[in-house]
Image 1 (tube, rainbow, N blue to C red):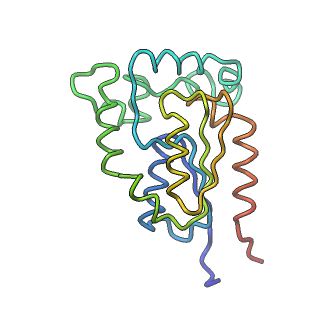
Image 2: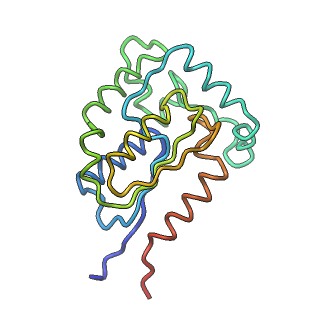
Length: 185
C-alpha cells in the first residue's frame, strides 16, 4: 500500500444511490467496499405506497429504535417533516406533502445508476427488503445484475424503514465491511 488509508462507505436510501454513483465515477478515494441499503434507481410514492410504508414504520422493531434515537429521531423524513435535517424534503413546488418526490426523481435520473452500475469495481453489498414498496427489491436485483462486484441481500418482510435496522442487514453489513477492510500494522 502507499500509506493512504482505505475505507468502506455506506448509505441508506438516496444516500445509498449517491454512494453507488460515487463508486461508478471513482470519487470515493481508496474505497475498499461499500454497503448500499434500499438504494433507489427511481421512486414511486403515492398514498397506497405511503400507507404501506407507514405500517412498516409502526412495527415494533422500528418503534423500538426510540431507545437509541429518541422519538423524533425515528420519525421518517417525509413531506414537511425534518426539512432542516433533510433540506431536499422541501424541494417540491407549492409545499404539497409529497411534492419533493419529483425532485428526487430528477436527481435519480441524473445519477443514471442503471448505466453507471457497470463501472463499479469496488465490492458492494446491496441490501433490499422484500416488503419495501418505496424502493422495491426488483430494483436491487436489477442493480446486482449490473454491478460486477455486487452481492445482493434480500431481507424477507423488511420495508424501506425496517431494512436498515434488521438484524440480518446489520450483521451482514458488519461482516461485509470486516471482510473487505485492509488492516495496516
